[in-house]
Every structure is written in C-alpha cells, then in structure tokens.
Length: 97
Image (cartoon, rainbow, N blue to C red; front, side):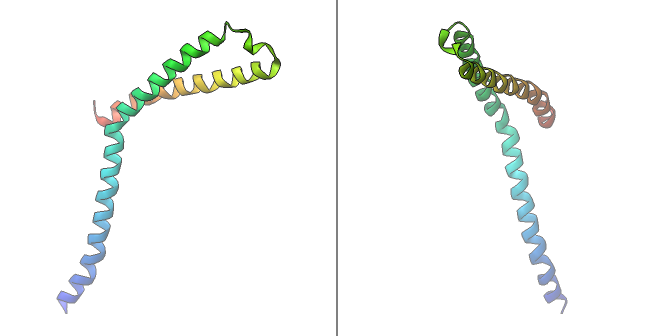
C-alpha cells in the first residue's frame, strides 16, 4: 500500500519539478543572452539615430504629415534609447555582476 501511495505522490511531484527546472533554464538563458540582445538593439538605435540626423537636414519632411511621422519616429527612437539605458543596470543586477 505504501508503494502505491509513493508512486501516486512521486509522479506529480516529478512532473512539477521537471516543469520548474525547464522554466528556470529558460529564464537563465534569457538573462545570459540579454547582453547580446541589448547590444544588438543598441546598435540598431545608433544606426537609427544617424538616419534621423540626416533627415533633419532633408527637405522631405516639408509637409505636415511627414513632419508628424518624423516626430513619431523620434519618439519611438527616444523611448527605445531610454529602455535600453534603463535595462542595462537591471540586467547586471540580475546576473550578479
């Protein structure tokens, strides 16, 4: 009888532990790869920043609709830049570095 109870209890616990281990492994991979992902995002932001500087001197943004688009693009750019700057310290804290 004790063996049957052990089997009934151990199986769900074993499944739960496997699920938790898998989830932890996934989260650790995300943290370990976050530096590379953040660096890739920062490189894209730098390229975007250069492109925005060029467009500041172009007559393309002469009509109101295009100026609105330019403003929206700049807002997205600045938000991405802020997110990148805010994330880096949190990432290092999570990694313990």
